[in-house]
Length: 233
Image 1 (cartoon, rainbow, N blue to C red):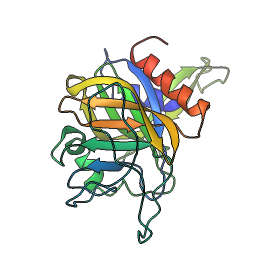
Image 2: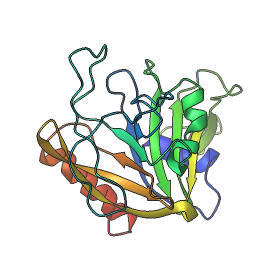
Image 3: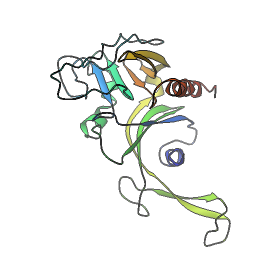
Image 4: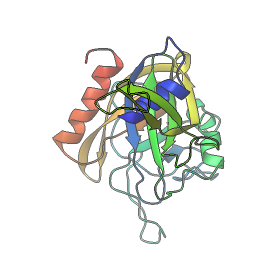
């Protein structure tokens, strides 16, 4: 994917390896949901944790998540499958504080046409935004032209063509020294067992990522992300 080239050009250091990139799809009205004491499901301050997932997490530290059961009076509809869930003991946990800029900027609210990606490298986990730039550069999402080999001929006729890479914004970073483990966590979501890739942090907080879709296809993608995390694929 061309976004990987953009991440390498704009974000990565020379010795940094990208292990995987995983798109963050919006569900309901938000991209990231929260299960943190003191915050509601959307990450706004509340005195009780939101109810997001049910079941018992496996493989890493963390408490069992509460059963998903919005009341009849709720004004929103919690989605059946969340693609990113933050969990932690309180709103000062590492998972929340490292996503603070993302949350306060308002981009967590679903916006049309925005492309967000989780990227795990040898150095960090990042939440990145890519956008195709219509100009030659400049601006927050300004792109970068790179010469790549191909069948097309550029003006010099040297067998290379200029490609406009997507611009990139870094919304959050989690250094590898605060990531304690990456493992598969299993949850029941509305009665269905689903696999999530859990990135556990040093203080016990975590980010759970699922793949779009349902059934063995989605579970298989989570297993593949885990394999790529440890260089097994």
